[in-house]
Length: 494
View 1: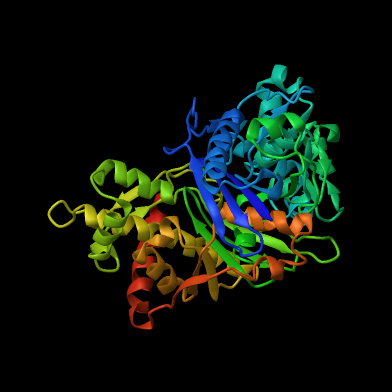
View 2: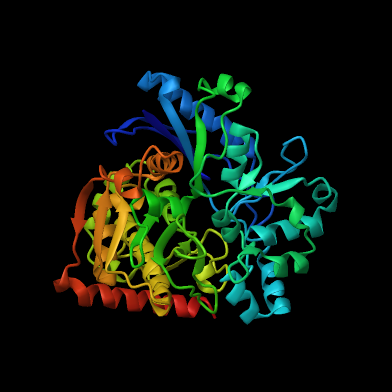
């Protein structure tokens, strides 16, 4: 029996087919091959057409079915991972009303800040575990205030993965995890966040049916099965935001376990069984995939918007003739601290870890007689790691202590400089695995459909590829470079 995983990102949509018995990924593909278009009509805006996600999902799925030659009747179920915090609005015909306002769009930050003050900080944090900030509910309030004619057409709102699931099954649904990442779930009352809905003037009727994260969430419709080349026997049985799903893909389900990823944005995600929050919402707390009121599992999430996007930007500017592997090799030739060059990676919108400030990226300490692109490449990777460390210091204050960090061997984690710097400055062991979001979503589908009796069975074939231990002999060098980075940050946020 086979399991499909869809990973709907902002750069591309990836599809993987997992052999449920062996745990082997039989085929995988992603589209588009260049980054998916993000529209920014004004500074700090970021939108995508949900039809782009559907179009590229179909292309990637067609590749996978062609390569694997699997019988569609043998595909048990589908799991969906998706870019978090996005807003999709549909009318009664299930048609999209406007482009999705996606995760890195900063336009609603002031709306969330105002609601936080009006509702009261302590009340917000104790119920929602976060400030409303720039999350999905605040994005919808922006639409209500600025595009009332579109808001009036809303039948249901949903997260990006909910939209894909609706396209597959015809059912408008969401989860507690999805609602919590949109700051629409009240953990104290264990229900929709009435306090925020009333402040924003929303009716709860716009929220779809709430279903479990792992469950039979609907069969493929006859029409979509024919369109995709799949069987109506196949069901959707799992959905989760990309970071909870990344944690799932690494079998990070229990208190004290930590997952990380470093793609376009970067995330450190720790699991806790205590309802805790950062008073300044610099890191955020959401329901994890295995959350329940009686047995809480919460994900404490640090997000750095400017991560791999900085590395990609540098490639276009100074490394167009280089592969990413060659860039990593150049960076490795430069000593720790990049000979005084410091880069702040905050050039992709407002950063939660900086109290929703948008300070832009900063390049500091460049000497035209000494430094070349190799110094820039290393400083960029160090700057990304140091932004992780800066946020992890906040996570530590609410009980998330990084002793072991699990990650897929992909994106920035392919770089020895990045891995060694992260281990060196945090003191944590880095474990790298043969998995990614689409494979994790496929495993989640197997859990949700009952194909796997337990998560332990689902992850019995997960393989550790590499372990990176912190080099104690270089600890002082990493700490000195980090302190220099913090000084540049301190001057830049005044």
